[in-house]
Image 1 (cartoon, rainbow, N blue to C red):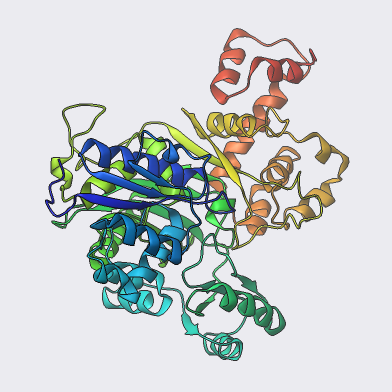
Image 2: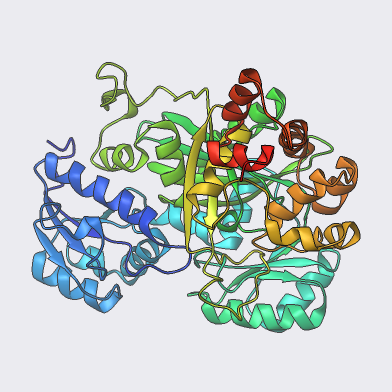
Length: 503
């Protein structure tokens, strides 16, 4: 039964059609939410325009509307079904924006429907770029030099005020960095900011000083109505700031942070979610200077996100399920862990393995699309791999991506000279991982690769381990000890046979 007696009938906004930046990860969260609500005896009304999702299965909701996700559609459903609550934080940015619009119009109040899971003030302070900046400054959390703009000319003026180019354009209330990008001069800024203002529901963009080369770190955080907070998982981007999280390889937990850096960012995450007053889950993103302890808060997603699905599967902690129970009035110390049957959701999970998320891009279908990666997400899918080491996990991820590769060796790169490989290190494309590995294999100095890519040297030395192993067994029979080492590093038998010459 729900702990809050005022919740009897809930309208759940689904994830809608699969688009770049919003796909199956939100169906995963929504299906969990529907199960929790049904188990609590609540009448579930679901609106989702995508009939291929799990959450639209007739067993998961009492009433299912396969209708477009628009305010007009939701208004008609609310008038007909008269739900007393609206759960909008599990359908990605679309659900959050729609719930926010209905609340601001006064429509929800008019029909006795309330937002649960996250309140309007929390959404505004996290999504509105100006309010977010003010909130971070209030709790002394550092932010990147930036300012808000509402016209293209204002964007140009802001860029000059914060120290010139390059700058990042971040539109408010958009998904997957849509409409944003890095501008290196005024002409690029005018073009990007024009698109960003067009796509922002409130015609607002944040112009931010570009801090490319800093590490990008994320924390998945949960908070209940009593103020209890915990971090579910830390995550680290393989690529530095400048590549959208959805387009970057992500490692969980963060592997290159010192304990001081980890505790500093963890504490900041807990302070942020507490100040925003979020009841449920949120994702805090940070930029960390690799040469000092300086950091900055990039943004906060006051909802279940792509990272939430990764953190849930990586740790076994069901974030969407717990967030839904929090929305029903339960506190973290009242939500039992279904896996152990004894512990509760207030315990932070710990893992002794490495989890890697590798994006999948649709460039094989869109042959003339630009393969360059940036602050706007282009990936349409991802794979997750678990291993006892980084080397094993990254190798499994590459095979799981089904891109016709069994290891980090990309055959077509063999045609390039050493100078050309070094030159390709400057390119931010979907093949960057394999170019970096090829550079390590050819003996390019780790320091040189780091200076060009700003990929942490820890990863580069891990690549060197793989290269040295491959070189040590090339063209000869291997011993049992070498075979076992290869298996621990993640090589399947057929790839080991190729390495020793038995093709």
